[in-house]
Image: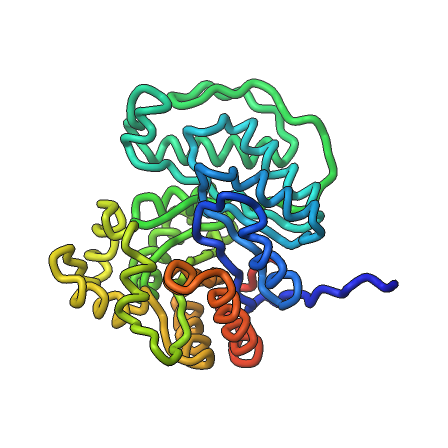
Length: 340
């Protein structure tokens, strides 16, 4: 029997994000199967404190879902840079496909609970961490004594698929740091106008001594308009937990998206109006994703949180499949060619 041929993603193809913390890899399998049977760019997982994301992705590869993958984002305090580089290249080895290893700092309370105190300089912590991970993946021997980790040594040589190192970015300061050291800047809930007017200039400033700035991967909440669906309800379901986190609320205010915990209707309208949550037909969503591309995004991640939380896995996958088909037929070229 001939092997099933997986459609190959082009440089403009969106990726797919499984946005929850899975109790078991089987819950993610329908999303992995979707990526494998379509031209979706890759499968992204976020940090999970239930089933650990690297192990979930390795399990899926063992099931035959050997797709390109990404982590958006795992948290620095959980593992030393040596372990982070080892995990990332192990995924590249078992999948045989490119990996984006994305990292973020977490909130100060979480950092304190694991390390004893919050990072005095989050930007320094991220800069040093990503530099060490990148150098280890590149086969270098490190001799680093910094305020947040020590690293003396190297990884054993191993051939594997490419690994990009990413940084979670919401505000200009971290964007400048990502511009210095990251291959990918990973953003969540960042409106296209904010990406273009605030984050891109900061990334370019940070990357002024590099040949190119990091490419941008952005998680975009999406939901098709269907009978009986309330876009406001979907918007709040999708974003509710993030709106309670101060740095997300601050980023949205900087972006001109007014969020008020005492006015859910007004907040939902602002999220929809600001294109933080994108609803409509599949073609309309494809057109809005092109707005993100013109703003500088190289890899949109389709995030179906609202539908997944209110209607379940099958409804979310059905939405994504329609949106991917529309994107495949609609999207023009991106501003910056993204690595496959």
